[in-house]
Amino acid sequence: MTQYVPFDALDAKSFLASKLPPLLSEGLSDGPVNTSPPAAPPQAERTVSPLEGSQALSSAVIPLLHLAQERYGYIDDALVPVLADLVNRSRAEIHGVVTFYHDFRRTPPAQMVVRICLAEACQAMGSDALATAAKQQCRTDFHHNSADEKYRLEPVYCFGNCACAPSVMIDDRLYGRADATKLAAWVKGAGTQPGMGRA
Ligand code: FES
Image 1: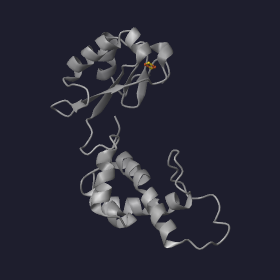
Image 2 (image 1 turned 90 degrees about the vertical axis):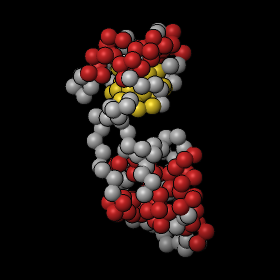
Image 3 (image 1 turned 30 degrees about the horizontal axis):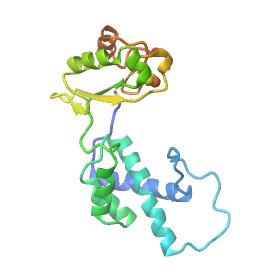
Image 4 (image 1 turned 120 degrees about the vertical axis):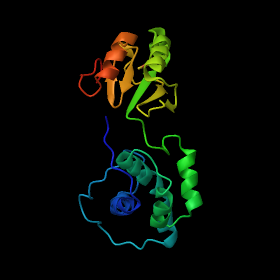
């Protein structure tokens, strides 16, 4: 299971402030966020206009939110004013970004996330029955946490593991050739068993 840092506004402030300069110096590419320091110092001095600086800060909002979610597991409401101050934007703007993108969770995650592939190849190999079994086992429905916050169930539309369909992912571990019996064992032993197919 993924371990997160308990959310604390002061910790979030210093954590995000430390990530902002590397993000800005890397030009905020659309790819995965690289939080390591730049390999070489900036080559040429160039005056950055206030508008450019403002746009760069705006572009940092989504990478910073992803970093915060990786650290705390979700976007706490108290993170909004912290981030708004850091990037010089209104709280309403930051709140709008958080609520627009479904990738950002606004409540603490369940202890275990079970994802079932419902795309074509997995459907052909029985993922509907697997989904039914998963709902019973996890005692919840898609897009919801179980009442005890132990499980969250999510549908996925292809893991790229179609050759080993049907596929499921438990936390960050991918399993193939799943069935209800195997799923029950994997959920029970999550974190202790190797994956099947492309892990
Ligand atoms: S369709 Fe399920 S992994 Fe591709």
